[in-house]
Length: 101
Image 1 (cartoon, one colour):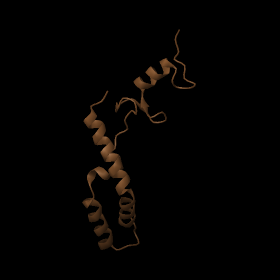
Image 2 (cartoon, helix red, strand yellow):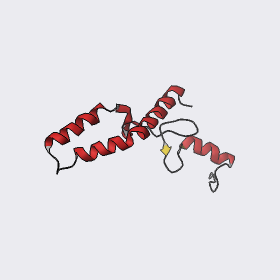
Image 3 (tube, one colour):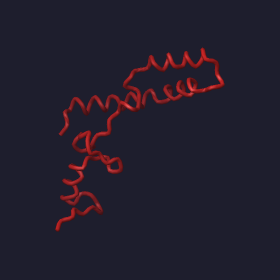
């Protein structure tokens, strides 16, 4: 199980990303628009830099929904390999059979 604080910090980042997504997207569109003047584009970059760093989507870490583990994460199942194996062994994941020979 991951530390509660690291899980909470990641959840806080995810909330910030959701909150600032629209504003960040508009500012990026203005900053990358070649048709606008350099001053307008630069102003958009400055406003983008004023937004909280944790509102950037790249700062959110994929974590297991069950244990909070950040490594060995399966995106499709949204859990780590360890949690997947435990739940699969208990028969809680439909269609998953742990092989043994």
